[in-house]
Amino acid sequence: MKLTRRVKEILSWYESDNPGTKMNLARILMEGKLGGTGRLVILPVDQGFEHGPARSFAPNPAAYDPRYHFELAIEAGLSAYAAPLGPIEAGAATYAGSIPLILKVNSSNSLSTTKDQAVTATVSDALRLGCSAIGFTIYPGSEYQFEMMEELRELTAEAKAAGLAVVVWSYPRGPMLDKVGETALDIAAYAAHMAALTGAHIIKVKPPTEAIFLDAAKKTYEQNPVDVKDYAARINHIVQACFAGRRLVVFSGGEAKSAEALLNDVRAIHAGGGNGSIVGRNAFQRPKAEALKLLNDIIEVYKSKP
Ligand code: FBP
Image (cartoon, rainbow, N blue to C red; front, top):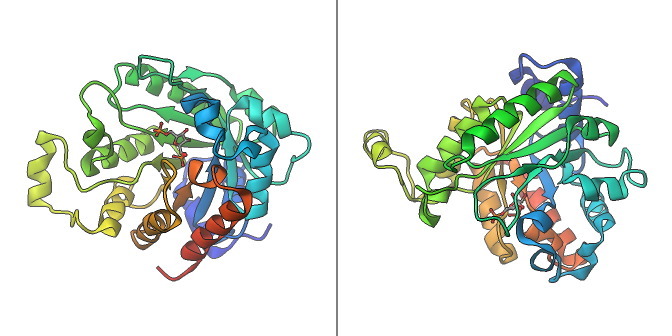
């Protein structure tokens, strides 16, 4: 695998990592149609845990089969496929070596009344299954946020020692945040920054809205304004919060929406200097041909000059 200059530059940001972790990051960065560009499109399929099987897969019943997702990610030429233990195990032999894998090692579910996650897989599972990274969700703002961050600290240390990369989903939620707060610009930047502080290699957040939520932050944003009406400027602020762009940051796709709405997000992410998208429901809930077209259109945006 001959690395591009851009990928070598990105790897140089991760100054403490051992060769194994750098190799695994390089695998993700060199894979698929965006290989070598520094942009990423990842397929995440943990919605079975998060939302249940019917809400996740009934719109496209082929997606009940875990092998469907490996094939979708491979055929679309994506950078990686992320999923919990069960689905990764279900295709482990058939697709070994075909696409970088991110083992999602914790998950929540819709039957829980608390904003917490259970650890459902281990670093040794990730190694056994040939994964390039572990994926972990934190909920900044939750009553359990500190326990989650401490679990992440232990798993991160173990993953890095074993030569794996770490992808952190940072989703603000909890008693002090309403729906507006969860995706407000200041909160999204704060969540992305905290993921960087935990030592994540790749950070995953939701695209930020125009809202500024925390009273304590409003004055600072007034004195140091971000053009909140400009979507790309909002993305760029998140990039800034990720160590001035020295950590990879990708943005989630969200609930099913029109292709044009999703492409609009992607154009802003690209223009704002974000490193890519992690698109689940908007990919696997569409019929496969439609999903492949949409993923290709997303990739074409990321290939274009920002
Ligand atoms: P989507 O593209 O389907 O939004 O997937 C991204 C993701 O982070 C999944 O990994 C996760 O299951 C889901 O979003 C959680 O979504 P929500 O916060 O809306 O419950």
